[in-house]
Image (cartoon, rainbow, N blue to C red; front, side, top):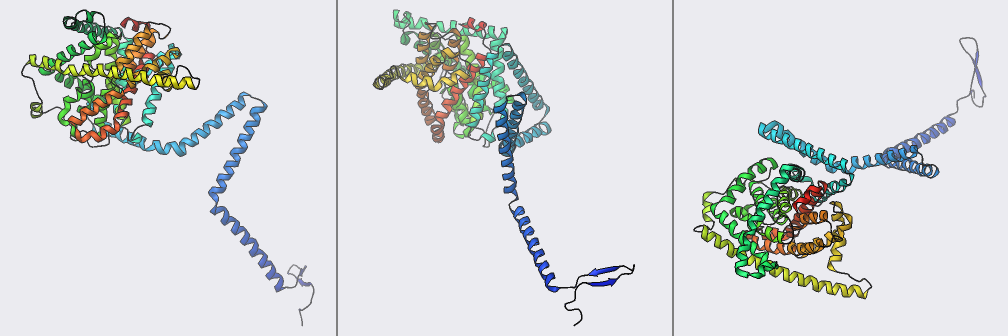
Length: 571
């Protein structure tokens, strides 16, 4: 047939040239189509594979690229440590830190920033101009505080240690918070700002220093009247400075005076009127603000009585704030006893005032407010005040205060006897065990020395005395502040054990109710006056006690940062 088995054919084109054509073969076309389909299928599968595993492939590529970059940096660093290599290394670390912040930390920080933005919008758009002025004043005060801190560090770079320690303790408390991302930063920042401003006023300005020196001397003169009564009862024993016969009678005298002032309503009026400004600026409720301020003058079981009718209805955050402020301070009734151990009134009063706003800030940082405070009221009603037991006249009030102090001094004496004896017993077993394993002198003080040593270092206590102060803190936490102050007074007699600066800083760390024995006292108080809250109180007692001690350590950091020779005049 025509066309079968014929070779190439020629055809004349329109231009007159010949064009050679290969003969058409269907089998060749099928083979070419199959090859094209296979190639297309292969590339399609490859494309689908890349699309399906795109993220993993891209991640592997970045990993090997980063690995190669690090290998290059290592070889460059080993070969020649030039500034260029150091710059590349620093830039790499910065990029890694930025990547971690963007993909991990930012996801946690973003909700808090969004909450802050909404609150700022609410303040500037909805609140009246007094609130705006208050916020601006707070920001100005915060700027002033930061400026003074920078000036202090610039004049003495070693003061950077307590500054860093202060912010480290604040960060540590935020990390241990019950709700770290629901913290209301207004009371926290305002409380710490007030604490620092008060420290600047008292420790860095002459008017503040002279004012608190005058208060210290006035209170010293006031307490000296107790010597008349103790000499009348104990005779020559009171003149020999025996603790039970000279220091503890001061508690009876001060308790009698406080009870009389309470009967006339002087303490209630003073606390309620002074706390108006604090409540408005800091933003805490009237109950917790009033109790925190009252703890400057009253004990941890007396101050909450000012809001006694409302104790069962307080929120958990308010209750934790009241507990913390009780542990962070002491009572004016015990100032005389502290002074008998060598603690100057000037530094004791300064410590109590600084602890007031700091306890509010610390409590709101560790246990933020997450409940409705609509039940909060500005003051006690007349009906509630009538329910409170009142004395007939000031004579009965003075006698009642003295009688109420009798169990207190017996409790102090009993706790001191028990804990000093128990500590001696524990130390005996520890020393015996230490001798058996070749560690002579092993004791409870040694254990606390090394546990609390880092905290003493970061708040600015001189390194050569940190172990001594850490041991005193251990005595205070396991016993009470009077036991630690007695040991401090003995150490002060030897300048090699503790210097005057370390002595002053130790006073700020020791003079409060933050100890294990006070936990039982506070639990007993709430069991009587707020039995509905006993479960919450018992679960958070240890945390509140440690929070109170952290307030004292923040005071130590501030005093260390602003310390100068003028503070020695308070001794």
